Amino acid sequence: MPPTAVTARRPRLRGTPFPSPAAKTMASCAPSSSTPCPSSRKRIETTSIDALGAWQAISAHDEAVNRDSSSNAVVEKGWQAVRDDGRVRTELLEAAYAEPRLRQLFPWTGMGELHFSRCTEHRWAWDIPYIQPAAEGTYWVSGPLRTETVGPAGTAQEAIAMVVELLPPGCGPAYIGTPEELAAHEATMRNQQTDDGSGGPGGATRPSTDRRTPHA
Image 1 (cartoon, rainbow, N blue to C red):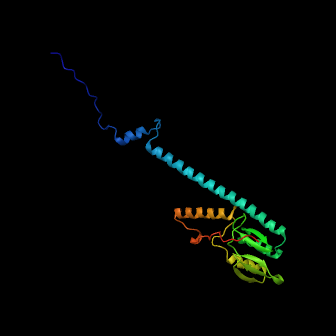
Image 2 (spheres, helix red, strand yellow):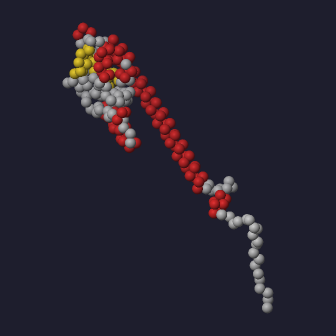
């Protein structure tokens, strides 16, 4: 009978175990491998997301800075226009401009009155009291609407203080646009704050800008 063929088995050295699943995974993630391992891919994706978020934050910040700069320029032109108009008493105009909370608003005048608007375009926002000239160098504070009055003021400084006390909650720099565009912008901001679970400054909600009448 022909001899039976016997397949020799390679001896395994003592103390040399077969590769474990973890070792196989590490081998697949070796630098020579052309395909990133799952953990590497996750780190790359996380880094990309973080970079995108940082870029979006920087872009939003730059946009806000540019918008504020444009708003400041438009508002400053408004103040100069009121000065050039000449109908508002100089002492009142200087006192109003010296108050930072009023200087950031858009001024306009009619019949010698000094008005302040939270937007820069006509018909402006009628939600801030205005100052009227009165006899013997005094003033009268009215508004925000024509049918509303606040009271008399003996000096320009007193009139300014009365207006500042009645500014709407969260009153900030004038918005470049019309009252309708301002209202839409504020509605969007409120929705974003609601989605983020945060309220406005101190939980305050700005009043509607629809309270307005034709300018004088």
